[in-house]
Image (cartoon, rainbow, N blue to C red; front, side, top):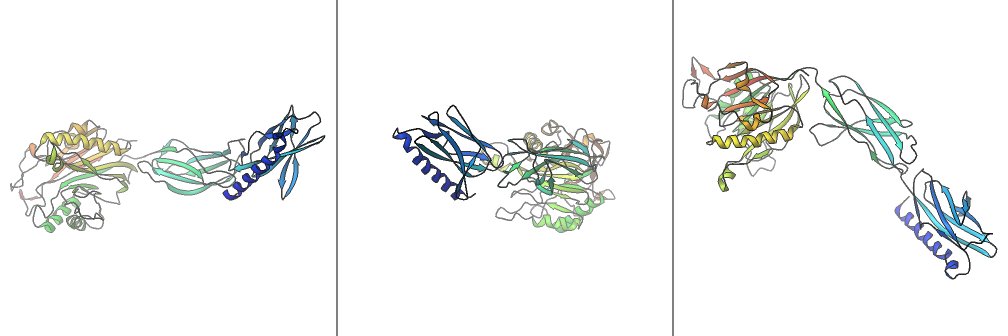
Length: 481
């Protein structure tokens, strides 16, 4: 029923009510008084309309009638001790109460406006299952007023854990209040069912049913970290990009965290990757993809192999507060580039974050590590976290270890070339204070290897050096499910 038609019926009812009550107002005899000017019912659900007779005589007779196609038709009603009651269907209709008796003929009119019925829609399924196994989801749907089972096609949607948007799945046919759906979940997340609504049954959605997809294999990832300056800091950028790509591919790395790839220009509206980042990506080849920072000035990129890991979501970059006050604090602010990946081998999601902490202040870097750890924990949704970056200190960072992470170099069962060397040197020089490129992973993970790729020939660095830093990488393995 349209809003205009409802309004017209209500106005008509009020006019008739006013006319019917005139007899009572001048005190000439009995009258009908409805309990309400209008009654509201759910469509398809019976409702009660009622009222009282004022100054009714013993011989008074009352009939409740319904207006149907311009004619009045009696409906069943009860009259007792001056009160009358009629049970009528939930629909838009006009009723009147006609009181008759010796010398009396008084009527009143009211209206039932039907609303779409409320319903209870639910979905239940096991809270967890091994990856790839089939589970059965049960859908139930009943009308709230009387518990009557409902039938219809409801929408089934799914939201991955860590995401905000819902994905539409094939619809579900509910028959006589029930349905079963066979699912083979491959991701953690929540399921829910929705009814868009109709004139008879109002829109409704179920509460979400959470599901935990349990990997059947351990996650194994090879993570690399590389501070690779662009042409604004070191010359021969194209040659250096090729050398860096060769080292990364030789190490057979799955995911790389980069620093100093020259962030997008601050006037950019589309936020494209920097020209040097594109050069590095071309050198890596077709098997690689690049995560571009969402904020300008952020030079922390992530490259990955899509055949080995899947991007679930790239979260917006986070700003790590600077140190000091005023312009110094603004200048020393840093960024975190966080991405939620899924290891294709184990189907295990992992949050990987790239960062670059302040230089020239070990205390400042340690302080910023707390912000990095906090940001990563907030975004992880409980998934494992890996942080890679130029930390500008060789210290073990409590801001990360306090979040259940460990320095994988220190935890590695095998360390190869675990050294660092100043850019001015021509040969590798062991100096622990220069081991500032670090990777942190969950304490429950095992670290089989930590490798520093020196890029030497006959004990000397080949020139030009790809970077004033060295590529470091590690093989990480999560615990068995």
